[in-house]
Image 1: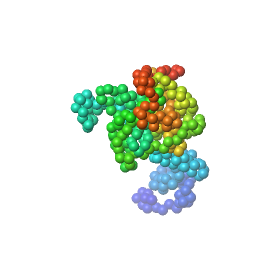
Image 2: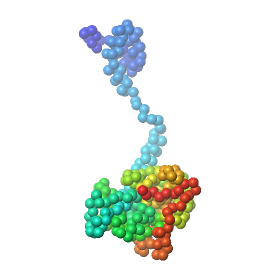
Image 3: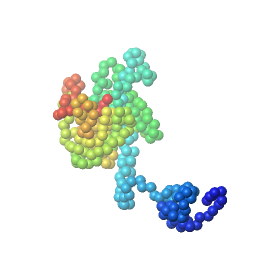
Image 4: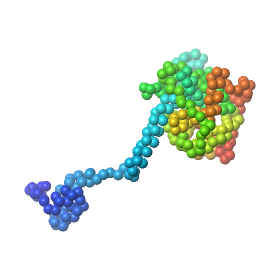
Length: 337
């Protein structure tokens, strides 16, 4: 240490206390050994040593858990990470777009982006290796009702290389009474990862569940929750009730419509369809609904083969039916904006 231009070795009492790691005791010893002015000089010179001691004090990053508890939390997090990584490639974004009239008249197969207006974004999932995509009917309702050819559906698929490709989709089948629809895209089958299909007949309230979708356009968003209720009845776009709906508090918002609700094994147990909102607020109250997968398993094959699961006269009536009715003090709104 340099003091008044001369080098001095201070042996007592600082060496003893610094070596023992008691910085506060060292400072007190200095104050006792020197006058106030000398002590200030010594403390300033000793600052590097004190700083070194402070840097060796362990930093607390929160509560310290026993190793067994910490390992359990680590395992749970890892399971959730693996669930998302295993399911996310099966989830797609469904865009409803409108093509400029002149481009439709010219029958252009490739339309510049500036001539395409995105009218809404929903979600969907890959059903099989043939390119069939399952989503909600209300996500593609404009396409289903459009006689002009201006409405198109675009599906974004995540590949194993991490790249997202966009493909035009054809409407294959629809069922407004159950708010389900099937699209088809033509892509190499190595880019298609069908979602594992579970069952909804043995679900229990309190089970963990997970939603993956595209809320507000943020693709491949994971949210978690529990099954809050079973056997709920919610209105469909046709105005008729969908029986047996799953209720969950997993956060789902505009853009989640048509995306999967998963169990703890990454299997789809429902199709996210509607959220309960207070009238006029547009905000979810945490009461959300999904069409049970056992219904989807029965309907989708018929939509792929026949285009509908209903007689044509009944289907036409339902497509022209009014929108969702009021539910108690609020409204059950679809999740497509």
